[in-house]
Length: 502
Image (cartoon, rainbow, N blue to C red):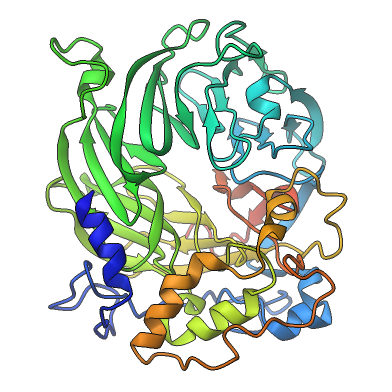
């Protein structure tokens, strides 16, 4: 935890080394250095509506002219859409159903959408328990093994104790509430801080993180969720990932990941383990390139454990680590777009400056399969949905993208969009401040007026000239099911020329 804090400070003063190949060169130190290459760009179809600027950028010109309201697509086609009133950061999918994250305060709850016919997704239900109408932030998750859906109530950044869990195994279009008492009744909260959450792989534990304090709920009997452990787990704890047995957690921190032994919670049987005892630390990795680490995805390559780890700010991209030795994670690659590179931090800031806190960073990703994955798909904030060929860890390339049409001028209609509701709180994408500062100190960009000069806009603070795509795109064969904040639920199909990659 102390290391994480020191690394954040180091971002402002360290000067990065050069990189010219995909894998880290000799001498590259992730504690201080910045990755300086982007994934090779996708080769698009002749009729695609391609990006007009850097890879991942929505240019100032496109925002001013209205071109961004047409969207951008490369090797992806929109099949169907349910926009509704927008979406919160994270939505969840199970079989043919999607559960659209709710945004406090003007929400109808979590919308249940049935996409059995992907060309015509239909609203089938609204979940209105306190956790669902209180805003779900990054806590709305599904456990496929048991067919469970759960979320905590998070009005803004942090919530306090509302939790509801549903059976979706029998009829995903009409979730059935399981805990009618504590957690679901007004005033009957469970003692925990909430911001983000995740199920253990077996679905018997729901983990909730609240910036530093983490809580484990026993949901083996989902009619009676109760706390079995609660304690700090790192500085700025965020999202998490697990090994398949649930015995190891990859807990995101302010700028890195703590690898924690969760076997005592998983087994519920280790003698002497107390409610507030710290989880044993199996290892940790912290860095200067990227902040607010979001979550990790466990995969294997030829049987060797790896994790994809996402930084949601600071242009840190998606890092790929060899995780065979938890005490010594080895960086193998870092997936970035051209707009994330140090030399382009002036454009990163200037083009996104009137569209809210988040700019051009990944937020949540998913893989098409856990063992020897073929593709990784990410919600990349204002860069839209990005899809990568990840078969070879040393040679990752982009194969497709879809950045949906900007919903400029529709703030009043999109009362459930976290972008429309909270994006207006600040104009500049402050999530990139440290990366821009470092680029200036390193001489990568000049500190002239172009970095901070706001473009002309009728909506100062949030001009809605690009969507926020924050949710993990879920693979359904060659289809992606995903929500973006303003465009809501979309069913996207990948061109067979690029997926599966070959």
